[in-house]
Image (cartoon, rainbow, N blue to C red):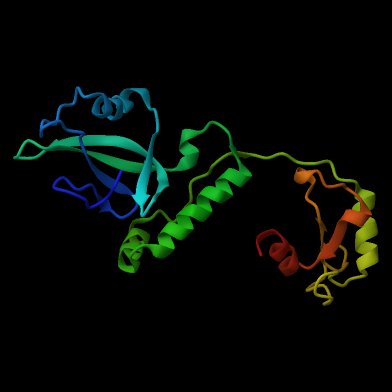
Length: 210
C-alpha cells in the first residue's frame, strides 16, 4: 500500500499505530463484498493477522501486524478500514528470545523517527508496569572446563581491550569477565578454548552488536 497518494489517501490516524486504509474500489464503488475488502473484514472473526507493507521509494517495508477495528462510510460513499497495530508476540504461541529482541529493536527505531511530541503523549498514556511475554530459547550445554580455562588465561584482564575487569563478583571476589565464542555455537563454532575469549561486558556487547 501507499500513503498520501490520490483522492482516497491512506494515512496514519496515530503515527505507526492506527491506520486509515481505504477499501479497494471499482469505479468509485466501495463494496465490502470485493475480495480484498472482505479478506480484511473477515479477520475480525478468524483472528488472522494483517501484515501491512508500505511502499517507500521503490521498496515495500513491513510496518507490522495489524487487526481490524472497524470500517467507516463517508458522506461521499467512500469507505475505509481502521486498523490497529498489535504486538508481534501476541500473534505467536511461542516466541524466541531473538524474535522478541528483533521486534523490540524495530519498535525502538520507529519511536526514534516518530514525532517527538507524539512520543511524549504516548508516554503519558503508557502503562508503567510492563506486560509479561513468554519466550522460548535454545541453550547449548557448554563445557565448564572451557569457561574456567579461558578465565584463567585472561587472568582478570579483557582479552580484547586489555583493560582490567570492571568489577569483582560479589559472591566470590573474582574478576568479572564473560566468556565469548569467536565463532558462535549457533553458527557451528566449537565449544573450545581456542574458539573462546574472556571479555569485559563492554567488549562482549561490541562483539555482538558492534
